[in-house]
Length: 392
Image 1 (cartoon, helix red, strand yellow):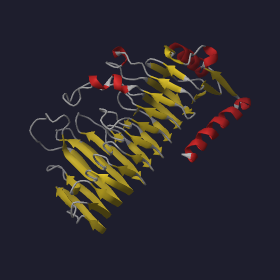
Image 2: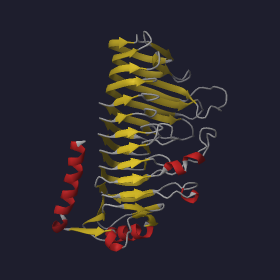
Image 3: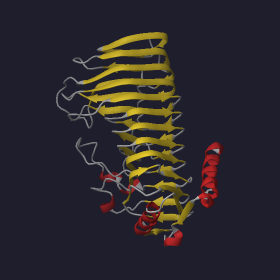
Image 4: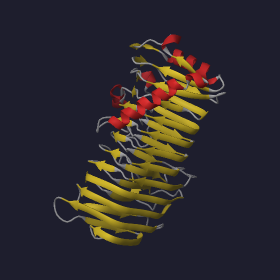
């Protein structure tokens, strides 16, 4: 925590120190923002951003201490210069139904290069007002509730030192981005909050997520179609559903997933650990070049799982064969405790078996006796310590 605080202070001081070196600061309060937690500041924040966006050079949007409510807002580029958003205060989402249903964002940033967001502040999605309207547990084609932060088509951007709590839907949604670093973010929601993934990525590349703490009601990180060259390092995950590649294979013409590295992470009491999940539907794509390394499991259900019969909401048609090809997946130095006897499950597709799966030094214990593993149509090799005994 001391290191995290130091990072935020350094970021703040750097922004202040460089004002004289060509940075212009736009203080939201000076432009009319009211920090009473009730007044809608959407228009003020939009106006302040637009001013900064239209200036050349580096421009800082400063949100000081206080509690600022704002409705769904889109900050859209491209900008003439580069915008830095310094959030020191707390942003509050609205709680009315109109801001929760049929809305795809709370705060959205689009079409920008070298965006920086930091300051150590918080975004409170006040999700408990919307979670009762989530029907995804009953309807697989449900419309998700809005994410707290949505990043679309950003390049070379940096998000650091933010805390997001109680998002109505996914906490951070990333789409169409190239070169995005999310560092020292804290994402928090109750374990029973529905579909409150920490970070969801799709159709994006070169995304780095180091040193994050994610405790939510769904996947800590989920990687959808088109996720390429994703690095997740030193993340503490739990409660939640683990880190998931997928779900994949639900729609035609999905992009491949490749080049994912998950390293030095800890899972605590999660419903899954390292998971790859695909639908048993006739839509072809590929997943390859995945590495999971130096992972600690603490009382985790399904520490290692490939599920190519994934079915959300439990009302899928009869089982078929997934057409998503999984290959070149490495598990190295995975250790800790499983809360289920079946610690390793590799349930691959009958018509497209998993290829080149590598298990190296897997050391998982189950408190109720020896842990076990189960393989279906999984091809590969196992080296070193294998506890439970490898089924490959």
